Length: 269
Length: 213
Image 1 (tube, rainbow over the protein chains, first blue to last red):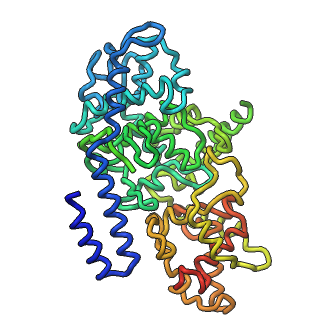
Image 2 (tube, rainbow over the protein chains, first blue to last red; image 1 turned 120 degrees about the horizontal axis):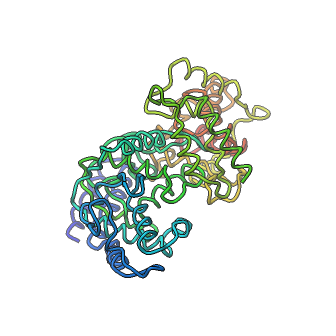
């Protein structure tokens, strides 16, 4: 509420000094900023973080064990700091994995779930919902840390290159690629600012913001869900959950974000 | 399943033929092809054949633009296949055009129909158009006062013909004027039909449209 008076003053000044359309745009943008600030006092993502921690620690699956021995890259059970170093290469699976893909691996190997069942779940439902909640909690355990994805293994470098190719790959009915929206600085779709993901877009922006709670639809989305909906809007066919193209894109964006501060789980429009 | 296999084979052939701009020397792109084929599947109206690139899409799929020669060839081909409106009737109803410009609907896997009549134009996602709509994108240039700035006072004046034709062409197939334009090929790719494009034309060019006030 402290902001109410300066905002009103700004609106009056704007109305006096500028054409009506500009004044409306200014006050609308300020209104949105104020709305976000109010919401940031209590990010509903916290509820999913709490759920994610509980899921992680609770015995589940055919084997009735917890995931507390899951190795997310820094040894069994370590959750702090793993998020800002994923995706990475895992020797035991011989594959590049992001956080959600790695959680699925642990649910299969430790708990006895079937990977295809989780892959085929709807977003936010059943075991996939559990993966997303855990990803939200684990991302939060790296809040304030800086992205530093490893690029030492050949597959890590290959996935960066393939992710870059996928990022610029035009196709579909509309000729869109990821770069159509996220290849330039300072652009918008409607009023939504678009981060330029071909480089480091800054602290807490782009790759450094997901998982995020979306105020517009009241939903908690992981990075997999975010990429899936990008491809829907690109008018592409359906990218499989934790499919290689999603891991490659995450590697490209994550390496580009080197040094950016993670604010995940963030609050989004 | 059979249809998908065929489509993917075509996709693979296209990828190989296009040489995937931006690829490292000696890299035949086999790993990338395999990744794309294994990662995507059909969903609703969005089939995997959407990954098959034409020459223009392939040439504009890296952080480097195509060579001048390739760009000019793509533009010339787009211009040669342009469809001009039936009966030379370019202008429809700007009110219907405004509704189309507002709608971003169409052609995703969550849409049910590929009939252009069910699609929107997506225009405000990327362009400023009327001054009343403040929620507009900035990927494309502002179109506010589009006709007025180009001196269109009377749609029947022969002097207005070149800008009217160019505008139709830009909406029908933007690649005729810029090989790697970010703008979809609304007519050429059957995203909008001729009547819908006439309505968008009116929104931009009709002296009575709010765009030109």
